[in-house]
Amino acid sequence: MPDPGLETDLITLGRRIRHLRTARGLTLDALGERVGSAPSLLSLVENGRREPRLGLLRSIADALGVPMSELLSPEPPSRRAALEIALDRAQRAPLFTTLGVPAVKPSQKLPMPVLEQLVGLHEELARREQLAIATPEEARRANTELRLEREARDNHYPQFEAIAEEMVTAAGYTGGALTHRTVARMAEQMGFTLLHVDDLPRSARSVTDLRNGRIYLPPASTPGGHGLRSLALQALAHRVLEHERPRSYGEFLRQRVEITYFAAACLAPQLVAVPFLQERKRERDLAVEDFRDAFGITHEAAAMRLTNLATHHLGIPLHFLRVGADGALFRGYANDGLPFPQDVTGAIEGQLICRRWAAREAFERRDRATEFYQYTDTPAGTFWCSTQTGSMSPAGGPDGGSGAFSITVGVPYAHAKWFRGRDTQVRRTSTCPDPACCQRPAPALAERWSGEAWPSGRMHQQILAALPRGAFPGVDDAEVYAFLDKHAPD
Image (tube, rainbow, N blue to C red; front, side):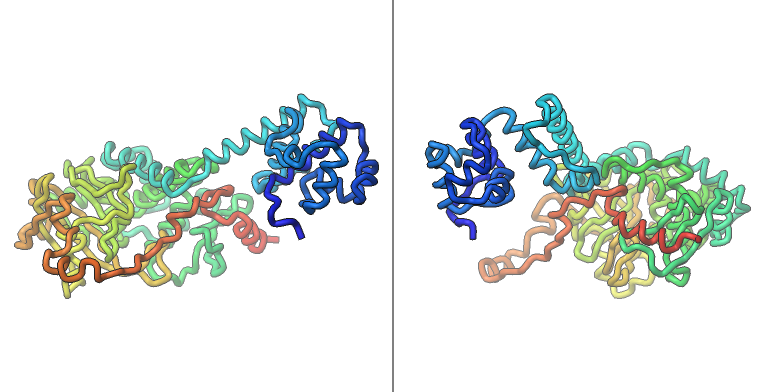
């Protein structure tokens, strides 16, 4: 067993022994005779692949005429030794293993310029990998940049609207809900066939076989037709928008925003959606539920689609929130001045919203079948909101959400006149971010339980992990390729 008291870097130790041995003109056989050890064992020690016993180290130090401290010094004995150590370490690292190329033995025969070049290349690979890895903090920063960009342009992308309108029209769409058959026709016009399978890789929402012109989707029996149409359209969007493999997590997030927008623009095309909304505005009867039902999409999709169209075409600034039953903000958008809670990086995801906001007040209602309307006075002004609650199955949805949630669309007070529910008498006052608003417990409760309560907080493990890196962030490449190989036509 290795001596537990021997704590030194084995690669550096081995290189120091080799340096001292060759400086004295000794071969491995000669040193082995002096210390009573096999040359093969000494070779493993010099290559950093075997930890020597303390007794053997003493014998080596005596044979080489140096104190033990010189053998155990953490500094490489020479510039060349330092490069050999660096190359050896780089080729043992997981990053090198993923390259699938043979290792280069850092022997004395390797020219110094070649050694320096190899080490430099490995250092650059490691640097680029470090830059590309997406930690949760980096992902939040990238997501925040995208949100601010969308808010600055009123979440309207005319180039995607035009492409979507052209494609649905070419596929025969004239109005109402976009049918599955129309989506399939759009795929056919691009050379793809939609196939539903029950063994889709767990890390993928859909898989596109570019070689054979196939798009694999979850089973057609999955509840919620909008979800399947949306997934198919998002898969097509990668091709329509000429996406390439994302080189960073920020680029991956941008592609997700673009394909989601394209899918929404197809499901509720502006050539029909805008006149529908304009008519409802004239009647002062705008409602998310009517927009949802007119195009056969989910309440959340209808609310998000309003953020694409309401400001640009109707002149109405607005905000959108998806909030969990615990009050945590899952997704948000605002170009109407509503101040979201945010961390020091500007990220809003995971932040707790005020208990007085409609997005949380709605959970206190007994009747959750209909939309909940509320006015809220805030330090930034008064806002009117329409909120619908729902719940996700324990397995979660495409974005991983599960449990109860609320979907909110709101506008500043001056624009409430265009919406159904503006006559609500429900009104709350929020002074957040003042902690006295809703963050501090009632004085009587604080006095009773302070020092006597110890809750165990819920831990979300994903906040500690770097987001997986592969050909596509977050996707198990091996699983996807095995899936394609299984389903590819003979």
